[in-house]
Image (cartoon, rainbow, N blue to C red; front, side, top):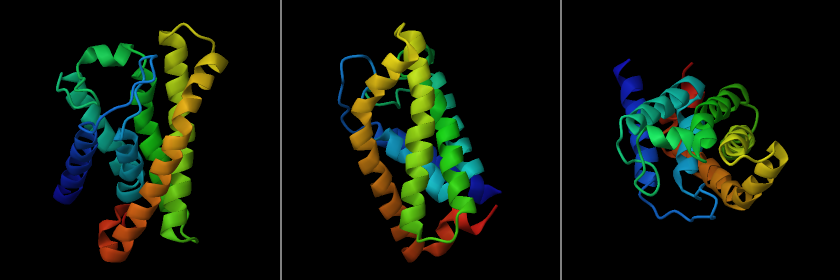
Length: 183
């Protein structure tokens, strides 16, 4: 139990630290950040349940006002801005990514983690992100979905990096890959 709590807290901190890296603004309120890599890693390393809990802990910290999102943002206001759908989508994104890691065991870890990150960390996340952008920016869902296309190349790179990092961890410390070692 204590190890699970420590892992959840550690990965919430990893995502917060990734928020310190410079963000790239696209001009419509949703920046390109490294934090989505952390969301992917939550799922690939911690698994579905723990990965989602790490995200929930981070979102609680954000709601309390700590400026741990890219650009030193925090507080309740971020949950009504253009990034709100993405922030809410981090939870199911990490969960789905972790669930794929837990269930698909017949292929190399790097492949599974990369595919899981693309499905959970891009497809699931973008569904929530586009819906949130459509609401906040007063756009149609297809218009908002089109705005998310600018994020695809970078997020594909992040998914591959998540696969490689997860595979490296699996080789170096197999017991640390909780998505494969415990329920």
